[in-house]
Length: 66
Image (cartoon, rainbow, N blue to C red; front, top):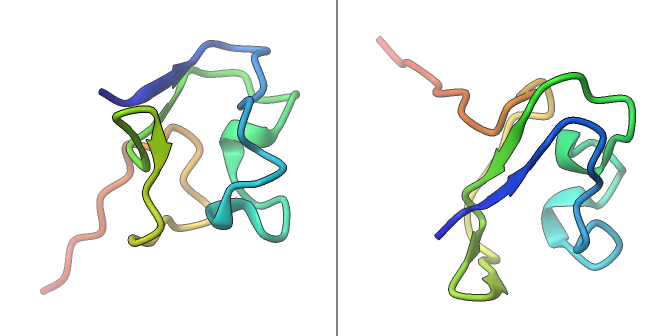
């Protein structure tokens, strides 16, 4: 199950998450004005593998390659 963060809610794992190394994760931003879904949080743990574009404001952005 993913971690769903409502507007104005900070990620409780923002300080130890490897996907927020430079405070670029939108789940760690207090001024976020939309819901954020973190797919890296599963089964009560942060998954270390994966990549999220720092411009992804919802956690649902998909990269389409031609």
